[in-house]
Length: 211
Image (cartoon, rainbow, N blue to C red):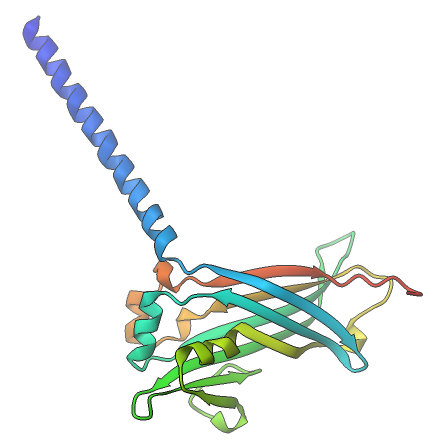
């Protein structure tokens, strides 16, 4: 009887140890991810109707993770995408997309000059056709990132797409695009929480006629 008791006690200790190990395995990645993932917020989002269309202004706030900053200082460009959609509500079906706009941004470091370059375009950025992109140089990373975090008077829709007496919503999304990293770098970066940076917000554009 004593032998059976010892066996049961041993199995009980082993079972408790397994449960504790499983808990640690499940808990640790979640905690690490919460610490590593970049915090991002949208401090301002405004849409203004002008004579030629709808313009969007936004102000974001976030800090780059250590992994992203290290990549930048190594000369690896980092890409960001801002997207805007104007949606019209339909009671009989899903909302209709009446207008879309995208802004592609890139931040890169020039080791020889020790300067930072911010580039933006309405088309996906590539090494070809850089002449049609808007590029600015800065002396610090913080100055370059300020241009990424601030969007001013961005035309996201033609006036014809904005209808009176219909319920419309502006959906704004912003994220760091790790898929644009060099192929050899993507293998280590994709899926890591330090490269997860995204913001999404909706804004009601409903306009009542006669007001």
